[in-house]
Image 1: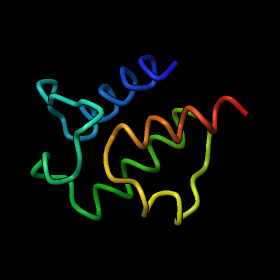
Image 2: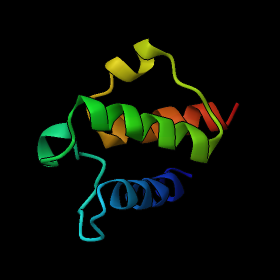
Image 3: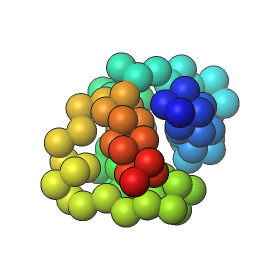
Length: 80
């Protein structure tokens, strides 16, 4: 399941940042993508919530360190 989520995340990020060459891995974080700032974070979260039909609390989002943690959180929320 997490591989499928990571694949979807790659598409979300490529679409959001309009860059099909982004290399998104579980270790990717905001420091790895030049345009990933606080405004982009909000847009990404909204996109992810819409695509996966889930909602995050602000506490869940603020504690995430990388894409892998986001994938794990999505997996937990979609398996309930």
